[in-house]
Amino acid sequence: MLPVSRPSIGSEELEEVKKVFATGWLGLGSTVFEFENAIKEYLGAKNVIAVNSGTTALHVALDAFGITAGDEVIVPSLTFCASVQAITALKAVPVFCEAEPGTLNIDLTDVKKKISAKTKAIMPVHYCGNPCDMDSLLAIGKKHNILIIEDAAHAFGSSYKGKKIGGFGDVTCFSFDPIKNITCGEGGAVVLADDAIAEEIRRKRILGIDKDTWHRYRNERSWFYEVTTQGYRYHMSNISAAIGLVQLKKLNMFLTRKKKIVQIYSESFKNLKGIRTLTWDHEGTAPFAFIIRVLEGRRDEMMDFLSSRGVGSGIHYIANHIQPFFSPYAQPLPVTETLWKEILTLPLYYDMTDAEVDLVARSVKDFFR
Ligand SMILES: *Cc1c(COP(=O)(O)O)cnc(C)c1O
Image (cartoon, rainbow, N blue to C red):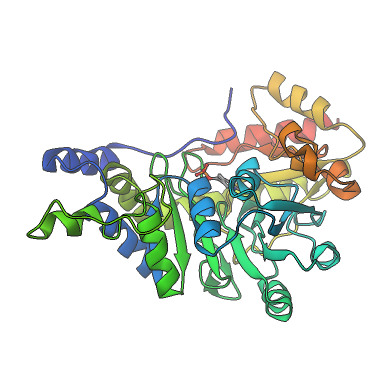
């Protein structure tokens, strides 16, 4: 069965991991700093803090920006549950909003309706890597004095109006989990301009200790440390960073191939009445996933049909406002309730062969024969 996604990793990554093994320094150290610098350069960003997942990136970013119990954070219901867990971890309140059917990105008309005196942040998700309307989001943030905390887990490598995602909102969080645009095995990064908050995040990622271990052990009083803030054990390891450094070098190659597959799918499906493809800024989108909307209640039927052809598919994602744990924050979201039952994710990853791409495209078309 063709998987929906698969990381492209090989001997180059293993070689770099071996080098870390040889140093005996597996945790937070020079390879992590090297990875942070490489991302900084790639994005043209001011501060990059590498952490151990996209979820922890969101959690530590919300915490460092002062989001706390009772604060409201507006978040689309149609996102990975990680976005919402990061909010509830701080006892803050997720205020679910709608997504736009054309892009699955955050619906700004609904965002405006959901702003209250308690709103501290908006968390847009760049769905499948297609950037949200950042100009409008930043204008809303400025007008109401609300933070824009971007969940850019899908969007590493994407650009908005010619500039890389990672330089728009107050803070941007990336994920490098196994299926994201690049992987560290598991990993994430927090990217922001504010130097003081960046320092706070550097402390928070390693238990609130005021200096990274690297610096500590180079001091003469190598045993000395101070705990100055609430912290977590969220730092990236040298092992993960070694994988990420190689992956970053392969990113353009990954994206070129994935964009080509997206082009083939889009071309193949353009005349199919029973499905909708998403509206994308193809130029700026580093494609994370290829999602179609299957109309007329036939999504699950299509999934079974594809499966019978050896084509795996997935659902990204089940609406969060209907999840049991988030039921205290549930509210009617008619658009999202329809959308999540239509969406189907098709296989898209670098190592797909032309024959496999063709099999997926043909199978989707055959479903309507
Ligand atoms: C993957 C993902 C995350 C979380 O990242 P992890 O590295 O898996 O913790 C958050 N939000 C979205 C939209 C994601 O797809």
